[in-house]
Structures are given as C-alpha cells and as structure tokens.
Length: 333
Image (cartoon, rainbow, N blue to C red; front, side, top):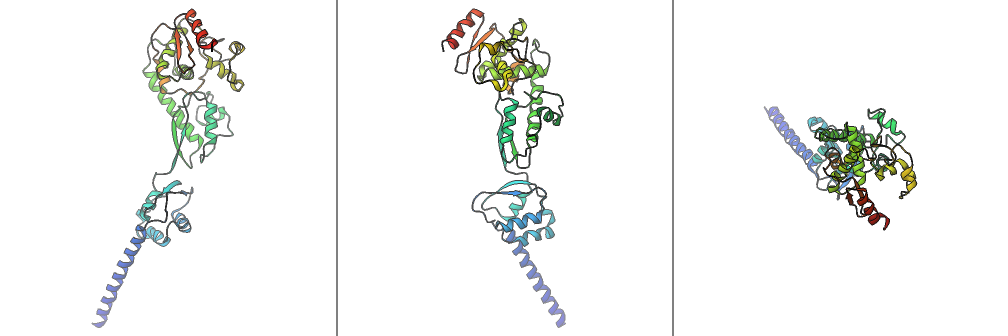
C-alpha cells in the first residue's frame, strides 16, 4: 500500500513538474524579442526553421532557442513554412508573433515608379539601378528580353504600363517587366473595347502608337483629347502629323535638347514631318488617360497646335492662325 502511495505522489509531482515546465516553455515563447527599434531581418532562400532559429539566437534577437526548437515537436502545426525575404522586426513583438511573421506574406517591399512618357530605354536604366532587385536582363538585348516575356519579334517600346510597382528581395527585373507588360495589355484591351466607331486607326497596336504620341506631346490632362482630335483630323485630311517628339525619338541619343530645321527634314522611320501617317512603333509608355484619348478624340475643327512654353498649347484652325501663334510663342521667345 505504501508503494502505491509513493507512486501516486511521484506521479503527482511529475505532473506538477511537467505542468510547470510546459508553462515555462510557453512563457519563453511569449517573451518579447530583443529589438529596441524596427530591425530588418532576412530569411535566406532555402533556409530551414532550425537554421533561422539558430541565427536569431546568435544575433541576440531571441534568448531561448531551445523553446523555439521544441515548438516543432510539441506543436508542429504552429510552425509555418518560412518564406524567403526581408521582414521588419518590431519592438514588443513576442516569439510567437515572430514565428508567424517569418511565415507570412508581410515581406518588406520597395517602390519602383515608371513615369508616363518614359521610353523603354529609361525604364531599363531604372530597373538596373533598383536596390535589392535581382538583375536577370542586364545582359539581354531588347529582342532577347521580349522573347523571354513570350513576345518574340515584338518591338518593346510602349508595351509596358507606367505606374508604381512594388517588389521585395528575391524578385527580379523580369518579374517587374512581366507585371508592367500584362498591365499594358489589359489596359489597352479595355480602352479599345470602348473606342469610337469612326477612328482612322484599325487596331489596338495603332491605338498604342497614337497614345504614345499624345503622351509625349502634353502633360496637361485637359489637352489630351484635343491633341488626339487634331491628329485624327490631320490623318483624315491626308496631312502629315508633324509632331516633334517623333523627330526626337528617331534621333535617339543624338538629340541634345534642341531641334533644328535639318532635324525636321531628316528622313528617319519616325519623323512624322517626312513620313505619312504614324511612326512604325510607339515612342514612349502612355498612361491610361492617353490611351483613352487615342480612342476617343475630342471633336472639333482645329488642325494645328503649338506649345505656349508653360506646358499647354495654342490650338489653331488655319495655317495662317498657326503661323501667327508660332511667331508669338516660339520665334519671339
């Protein structure tokens, strides 16, 4: 009988000890991590849970690595599959919250903005300078890059939607390009479906080209449809578009900020002073407003416009009126 009592006492003591150890273990997981300010921490690609726990202990972020390792044995369902990337550790965060964070989608991300009217060359230069973005396309030609995106043989200009994109460490420049390309395809499909019936253009790609001309001609929102209307009427009347941005694009890196009469007469595939109709490809990345203007030009009777020098334009109905405006806003200045 005494043996039974002893066994009962030992069992009870063992239960109490186990209960106490369990709650001590729980308290270690609930303890705040050792960071005094927001701290960036990176989970390397391919790193397992125990490796990350050991690294956090080495850095002094957590004190009791054993408690975190024990979690995989006692509560394996509470241990998420870690995701590679950068995470922001916050003061006051406890161990359980830390483990949940490192298995979540809350990775630190960085913005990358492509302004409306930029060229593909400018876009590539910005991508090449983006910090923490894996560079997969730096040694690719434009043709090779488009082939990588599944658009073999297509000219890249204009096919990427200007916007702010967010990326995290582990993403590549190709990932951003793919997003921007898919966005432009979707935007173009939407606006083309809502186009006017009497356009002098016959395809979504021609609308993309027209939108790029509008984008490069003005940044004034109220003028986009006006300029589109001028271009539409000139095309309908068999007039050349005669828009300076096409001359500049055709000159490439030779352009030094000035246009001469010789530049306007130079025969390039893009110079709309010497070619009929539109250039063969877009000349920039148009935004949504320019895409919409290209398929919904503003009705009217103006056939000319000239920059006032303040970001807006003077629109004219006749060549005589236009020449007077050129003298007023360009030659006198």
